[in-house]
Length: 502
Image (cartoon, rainbow, N blue to C red):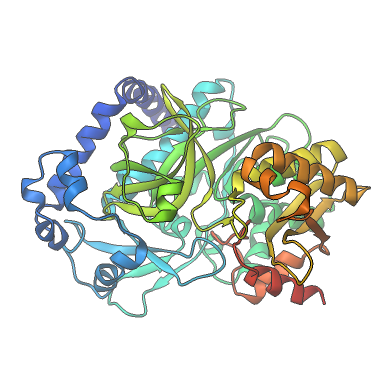
């Protein structure tokens, strides 16, 4: 263990120096990766099709290679899954991260190369530790164990020798052997496929360990923590793990869950956000207490950004990193060292800073309400709910919202289905604050709310505890990277969830 700690300390010092360099020369770093990616892809089937051999600049690339959604790349990926190689990337692809983005839609199978594992995902994990330990020099996270909640993986049913699974499971399966010395639960438990049985096993095994840090999706980790309290009979998690100091989270906004975590884990606790998606490791919170993340520029990813308005209209005018502006809502486009080329990942971000480049996730390109021209995005919704909770003392565990369409005489509205961990004493007051906050955050929403002519007041319905869990269970979407869609432009999810409560 002492040797491991020495190696970790040596790496962290070296890596922090490298981080300082890419923060100082971000455009040079991105230009270097652009050229390396083009060079790696030039002799692939994709590279030959688009003439990568004579692409000499970004304008050449932008003019020649189309922007792609998953459906555009699906035929190539399906061939990779069947065992063909050198199609999108020049090294063998054997792993595919299964992702659907939200609870609905067809599954996506994101190729994961060895380069993506080593130069992106694992590098991100090492940087996370380097940044945290630099910011918290008195940390003792290495004195105990890290609790990691993984998904599952299984042989691909259409290929020979290819494996599909949650990105967390792929990462765990390929971790170096020495990691097993400092993590819990046992890998055989962490990668179990049946979610509810897995929770029982993880709770039983980890409650006996000295856990100092946790990594996972906030919603599913919360389920585990509550189960641990049930089986141990303890009042809070601090009584189970007195040395717990860090929760590394990602996948969904932490804001709805913060109050519940602070209740379950009293006393000093650090929370650190990451942006680690199936397509790549994109961001790490690099300052204690910040609500944004450093965009990681040397992970084998070349970034482009398209304003959300242009993205929704299908207009292809993305910009490079050097041309972004703070405060603008962008759809992110990536070219990666696993063969995703000009791939629109579906997430939207805004830059909080350009020196260095820091970002905040604002939602999904498919997660919004614009049934009446209000253009409500997840970032608006989350901030408004935070405001309503702060002023009423409420706490939300899960929520979703969608439109209520015009009736014969009524205006439209937004219907909010909310599961509270601490409900407000006065629901109409909570609704009023939510409405006013949305007006202040979104001028289009405010205009549509004028005199209730287009949009009426929000309709907030309080759901019984466990409703969202039951909905996800019925859809076979428990655990892993599955998440509740926050906003929808139709009523499909609302009707499915309401059906459970009737």
